[in-house]
Length: 117
Image (cartoon, rainbow, N blue to C red):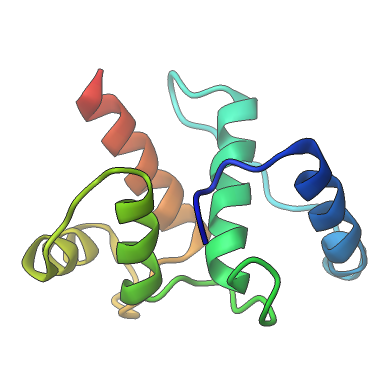
């Protein structure tokens, strides 16, 4: 997995793959964060789905485990060691599942973007 940024062709393929699942589960929940556009939230959701499914190579689980999260952050240029990873996980894993769900991932990524600004 190179990064969470995809081309239009990849987006079309992803939408085609996930279209049936979206129809089965109904419309996806809308997330909003102050200062974050709907388009940015959509990009974050796409990134989460790519990590969750390992770019379509496994069924969606609805969460990202610590190894997937570390790999994704490293691919985005955020270099974490294991201690930083688990410290961050403890801060954002509000349901104490040991994994990151979509809402927790949105909270994490919007906080990281806010810190950089």
